[in-house]
Image (cartoon, rainbow, N blue to C red; front, side, top):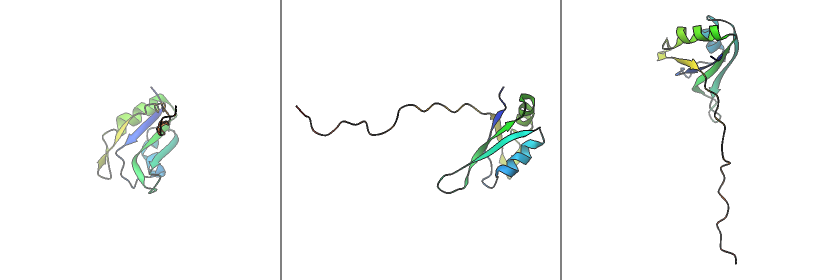
Length: 100
Protein backbone atom coordinates (compact mmCIF):
# COMPACT_ATOMS: atom_id res chain seq x y z
CA UNK A 1 0.00 0.00 0.00
CA UNK A 2 1.37 3.37 -0.93
CA UNK A 3 1.03 6.59 0.97
CA UNK A 4 0.35 8.71 -2.11
CA UNK A 5 -3.36 9.12 -2.78
CA UNK A 6 -5.41 10.33 -5.71
CA UNK A 7 -8.30 12.67 -4.86
CA UNK A 8 -10.72 13.08 -7.73
CA UNK A 9 -14.06 14.71 -8.52
CA UNK A 10 -13.05 17.80 -6.55
CA UNK A 11 -15.02 21.01 -6.94
CA UNK A 12 -13.05 23.47 -9.06
CA UNK A 13 -12.97 25.84 -6.09
CA UNK A 14 -10.91 23.39 -3.96
CA UNK A 15 -7.28 24.47 -3.56
CA UNK A 16 -4.24 22.96 -1.87
CA UNK A 17 -5.14 24.35 1.55
CA UNK A 18 -8.70 23.02 1.57
CA UNK A 19 -7.55 19.61 0.29
CA UNK A 20 -4.93 19.43 3.05
CA UNK A 21 -7.56 20.28 5.68
CA UNK A 22 -9.81 17.46 4.41
CA UNK A 23 -7.05 14.86 4.75
CA UNK A 24 -5.41 16.21 7.94
CA UNK A 25 -8.21 14.77 10.09
CA UNK A 26 -6.90 11.28 9.20
CA UNK A 27 -3.22 11.89 9.98
CA UNK A 28 -0.14 13.83 9.00
CA UNK A 29 -0.20 15.17 5.46
CA UNK A 30 3.28 15.30 3.92
CA UNK A 31 2.33 17.00 0.65
CA UNK A 32 -0.69 18.19 -1.31
CA UNK A 33 -1.03 19.20 -4.94
CA UNK A 34 -4.22 20.18 -6.73
CA UNK A 35 -3.56 19.85 -10.46
CA UNK A 36 -4.10 23.10 -12.34
CA UNK A 37 -4.81 23.67 -16.02
CA UNK A 38 -1.73 25.20 -17.60
CA UNK A 39 -3.71 27.53 -19.90
CA UNK A 40 -6.53 28.74 -17.64
CA UNK A 41 -4.88 28.42 -14.21
CA UNK A 42 -8.07 26.75 -12.97
CA UNK A 43 -8.20 23.46 -11.08
CA UNK A 44 -8.65 20.33 -13.18
CA UNK A 45 -10.78 18.78 -10.42
CA UNK A 46 -8.25 16.33 -9.04
CA UNK A 47 -5.10 16.24 -6.97
CA UNK A 48 -2.63 14.14 -5.03
CA UNK A 49 -2.05 13.85 -1.30
CA UNK A 50 0.83 12.09 0.42
CA UNK A 51 0.21 10.83 3.95
CA UNK A 52 2.92 9.96 6.49
CA UNK A 53 2.00 6.29 6.93
CA UNK A 54 0.15 3.57 5.05
CA UNK A 55 -2.29 3.33 7.96
CA UNK A 56 -3.17 7.03 7.72
CA UNK A 57 -3.61 6.66 3.96
CA UNK A 58 -6.03 3.75 4.49
CA UNK A 59 -8.01 5.79 7.03
CA UNK A 60 -8.24 8.71 4.59
CA UNK A 61 -9.49 6.43 1.79
CA UNK A 62 -12.10 4.89 4.09
CA UNK A 63 -13.17 8.24 5.50
CA UNK A 64 -13.28 10.37 2.35
CA UNK A 65 -14.09 8.10 -0.59
CA UNK A 66 -17.68 8.84 -1.60
CA UNK A 67 -18.01 11.73 0.86
CA UNK A 68 -19.85 14.71 -0.59
CA UNK A 69 -17.91 18.00 -0.60
CA UNK A 70 -19.38 21.07 -2.30
CA UNK A 71 -22.03 18.89 -3.94
CA UNK A 72 -19.57 16.37 -5.42
CA UNK A 73 -18.85 12.84 -4.21
CA UNK A 74 -15.08 12.48 -3.77
CA UNK A 75 -13.08 9.69 -5.33
CA UNK A 76 -10.13 8.76 -3.13
CA UNK A 77 -7.81 5.83 -3.80
CA UNK A 78 -4.17 4.88 -4.01
CA UNK A 79 -2.38 6.86 -6.71
CA UNK A 80 -1.11 4.78 -9.59
CA UNK A 81 2.45 5.39 -10.76
CA UNK A 82 2.75 7.74 -13.71
CA UNK A 83 3.19 5.64 -16.86
CA UNK A 84 6.49 6.02 -18.66
CA UNK A 85 6.18 8.09 -21.80
CA UNK A 86 7.12 6.18 -24.92
CA UNK A 87 8.06 7.39 -28.32
CA UNK A 88 8.98 10.90 -29.12
CA UNK A 89 6.08 12.21 -31.11
CA UNK A 90 7.18 14.32 -33.98
CA UNK A 91 6.40 13.90 -37.61
CA UNK A 92 8.15 10.69 -38.54
CA UNK A 93 10.60 12.33 -40.89
CA UNK A 94 11.12 11.24 -44.44
CA UNK A 95 8.59 12.34 -46.99
CA UNK A 96 9.61 14.59 -49.78
CA UNK A 97 10.77 13.32 -53.13
CA UNK A 98 12.66 10.17 -53.85
CA UNK A 99 16.36 10.55 -54.39
CA UNK A 100 18.15 8.06 -56.59
